[in-house]
Image (cartoon, rainbow, N blue to C red; front, side, top):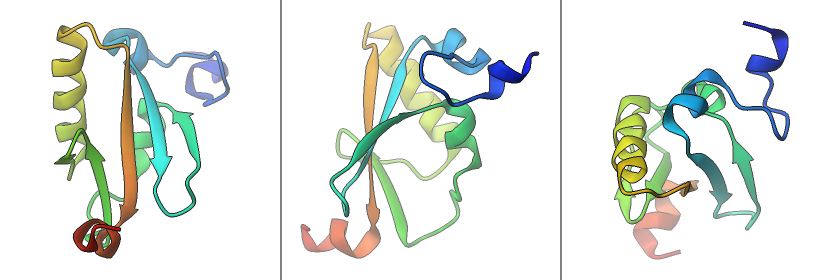
Length: 96
């Protein structure tokens, strides 16, 4: 594995993305900004933080394994890009 395999730089795919063949777009609900991220980056997120929620299509994703499961199902349907909405828990519960 080369150094570029782990780089989140634009245009570089990691082993996981080559296997899943799907792009992850992270939308920060607080700031309104969005950006692409890698599976390697998603793996490092604090999935045990109860104050940060991540959602895909209305479904809360509470672990990296759950994320992989959703991505696999989306990929089987031919979907090439998935948006993950990330926000503090209180904004998701209050309707935001």
